[in-house]
Picture 1 (cartoon, rainbow, N blue to C red):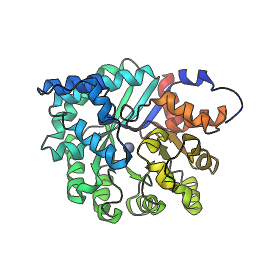
Picture 2: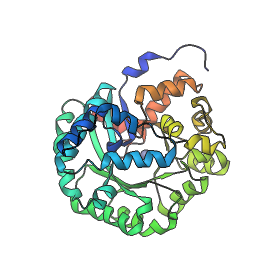
Picture 3: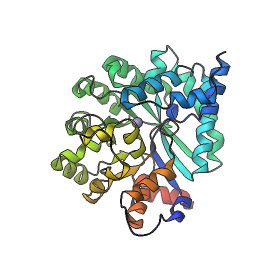
Picture 4: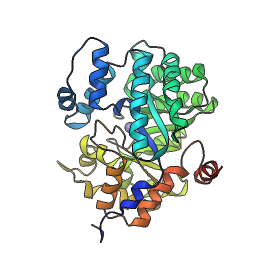
Length: 336
Ligand SMILES: [Zn+2]
């Protein structure tokens, strides 16, 4: 623990959120409203029970369950409104939000239609000071053909609000190299590239993302602590890790990386990675499913021993590594 209490004034500073899943941000009351739209009564208590799972696969099951109620474009509009309110309440002024387009396609939905509704729901938040951009995300275990369909959906949607393509899901399933042409195709559309890697997988998953797929940010990447040469590479090439500490505790990812049965937040490698020079952005991942918000994550980072200036550097990094602005561009945009 550092000396002193948490510098509360940091919470009122504007922040950016770069690793946040729309479908993991639905508050229990809104989940109940969603299920009711489709004729199924699910009380908030039951939602909370479903959000109490153990381990990574349990989390994926809960994610699958909640997304099964996202059936129409209006359903997506409802959850975007819910997310926008949550972000404004935390002084988030900029977010790149991940959309599980792979799941939309699996359910035979038309992502273009869902995205139209998402943009309409997001629009009113612009004038309230919240800029929202979107990341089209494929599910690794669905395979490269399905991932290519996600890229195609981004191409067909052709919106400047889509800034990146990425893959998430179970990183121990299909080998990274299988997605090479999918990422090439995303790059040819001008999309930035991301990957969830080194969350439950080893550091080689991170290296593969960088070297085979040309990714520009890594989702999680906590496995980098096992490979100092990889930490050097991330530091030298300025490839940030989007760290989500609460997520790593609740999915069991941190315990797994540390070869422990359980892991405490104080044992998170965020300080070690940051002090090695790796750019770090702090995020919530699936905040309602991990019972967290951005303020809680900053408090966690303080408990890990970060000084006030290190906490401020996390805020700066989150703006510096947006795909839209960069930290100076962002400040200029805000001053105008
Ligand atoms: Zn994630």
